[in-house]
Image 1 (cartoon, rainbow, N blue to C red):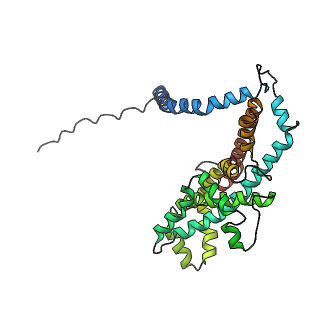
Image 2: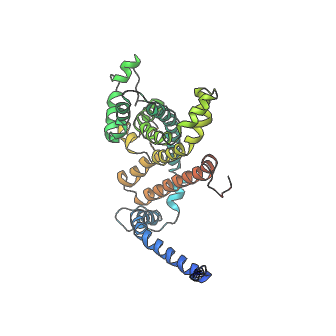
Length: 314
């Protein structure tokens, strides 16, 4: 009768101690900083330096033929409450109006376009490609195209059957900018919304259809809630873009008839009037406005509409 010889079982190694975990964490943290350091240096050089330089210039006066003098917040006082405040607040109002109208129209039209492109039908690829044509056209070319179409004898008035001076008075000029900007950038929102639609499982719609839910009920209860994260990202991108709109109204209307935006006001002060201190103050105020609007959007709207991460309070 033989007896089996069992090899001794080696004990499991002890778990790493607190000192080892902390040392490994420090190494990982150091590696992470080394990896992101090039990107941080690039951002500091591309974004940080111009911003600091603009703030520095905004603290000095605009003098021709002699050295600029330090005036502190004088340029900011001039823009906010001084003799140039009416132009600044008018530009803020116009920029906010363009942002509100274009965002609403682009969200509605872009979502409708995405829903159409998401359906399976013959020629869907051709429709997707043709929808993105306005977004692919350069903005300067779009502005010239719409300025030609909105001439008194242009195709728009011909289709309407009446003569409208689109760039001859305030609200027609503003609507001309809104229509042209919506035509160009609605496909961008449609593209982002389409990407969100493709992430929604078809099984959810099939189950809702079996339960008797109609098309509107499925859209309101399934599609829209699941689409909201992608839609909010698209709206945020467009909001940041339209708040600094410059080239389209500049070429289309030249800022006449109440279409001067904040970016146009900055260029007018800095380039056309060579007021570098005042122009730098305007650019700083524009940056602060866009930053605060984006922060408020992410903080108050994003936290309520985007799904909360695991472990976070809704």
